[in-house]
Amino acid sequence: MARFLSRPLAAAARPSLPLGVSVAGSMGPRCSASCLLFLLLLGTSGFFQSYAVEVDVKDASDATCLYAKWMMRFLIKYETNNSDYKNAALNLSSGVTHNGSVCGNDTQAALLAVQFGEGHSWSINFTKTNETYQGDFITFTYNINDTAVFPDAKRKGPITIVVKDTMRPVQLNNVFVCHNTDSFEAENVTQIFWNVTVQAFVENGTIGKKESRCRADTPTSAPTVPPTIANVTTASTTTSSPAPTAAPKPVENPDTGNYSLKSGNKTCLLATVGLQLNVSQDKPLLINVNPKTTSVDGACGNTTATLKLNDGNSTLISFTFVVRNASASIQKFHLKEVNVTLLNRLNGSVISNADNNNFSKWDAFLGSSYMCRKEQTLEINENLQLHTFNLWIQPFLVKANKFSTAEECSLDDDSILIPIVVGAALAGLIAIIVLAYLIGRRKSYAGYQTL
Image (cartoon, rainbow, N blue to C red; front, side, top):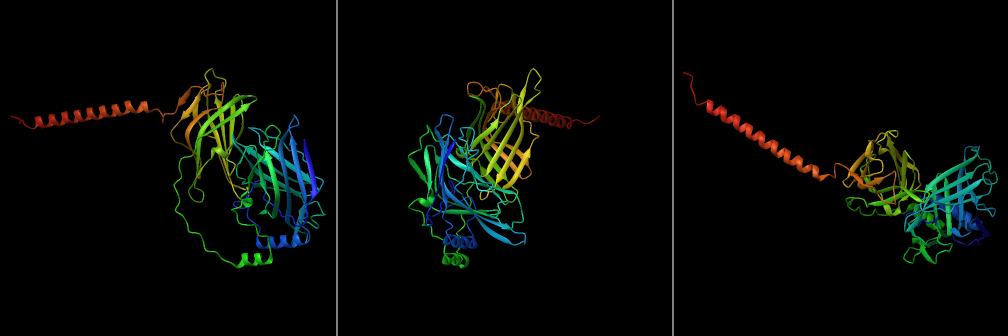
């Protein structure tokens, strides 16, 4: 259940950041010079006379669980039947609905979704950790069949774009606030946001009193300069000196994260692991997965379990475990498949999607856990490796939210090294004795002559 309030905003009002995106490091490329000029022209014609939307999503007990209030506009470039291109301004009308908005919890993302006009919709989902929440993906669908907005459009039907939100993590029970303007472009669409107030995963139905401000609103930030003809001209003619290139720092081992899945009220999967990606498609690149910003999803079953990790930035990793010989009296599980998706941080597009479903690793008896403290390498494909550190995993039969007895990997079993070293030393000593004996015998025979 959600409550909406739409009201016109004065023409002088200044548009703000996308939900959770700061001026430094926004969700996508900034407006080009032509875009800024177009914004200026629209502004003089009352373009920024918009509607504020207030959404109050409530849970089953009628307590607020997700609150947002913001303003937004869209500039869309589309092709006409004459094969030329026009710019359309899509306004947020007063007739807004909220179908699909959900509260979210520890394992499910919260979703803020609105629908408006003739088949247009916009949504953002939020994920949380133990201490923070942040925006994840923004999905915008515009319907070119809306002839009032897209007259003489060549293409018909709805078009959907998905972009990755780069919202910085916000402390739970804090309200994210950003009054300043921001805009970004992706796939011929410029999204413009301002006067944003949002809090996901509201606790006890009470909106937090502490604010987390975007960089653009902080006193130390450079002031936002409204677009003018002079600004556009300067931006297109001025060349700045490149910043000095710092020497690359070596990538340290990743932090170890603790992840879990629940089935109902019971924990069904436990995992402790540090993850590092080695990407060599264009140039060697090491990426550490940050557990502090990583959300968990997946599913538990009797013979199959899947753990999905989303680092909230640009990496999605999925592990699939299966029970081997499910009908046998003695059963073991192992890692069967790993899928890694790398996203473009600017627009959320997929850079790489790698999958290997032929693994037979991390095997242990059903009802126990698997542990390997040393670094292991999983070959996803020729361009991508996944390194694990301090691994401890149990995808089945978790009891009392604790790991069962662990079966350790051979890399961790230092006790094996002692007999190996002693055996090798003894073998070497025996070989030396035998060799010395043979040499001694040959020398003794050399002293006698045949009569």
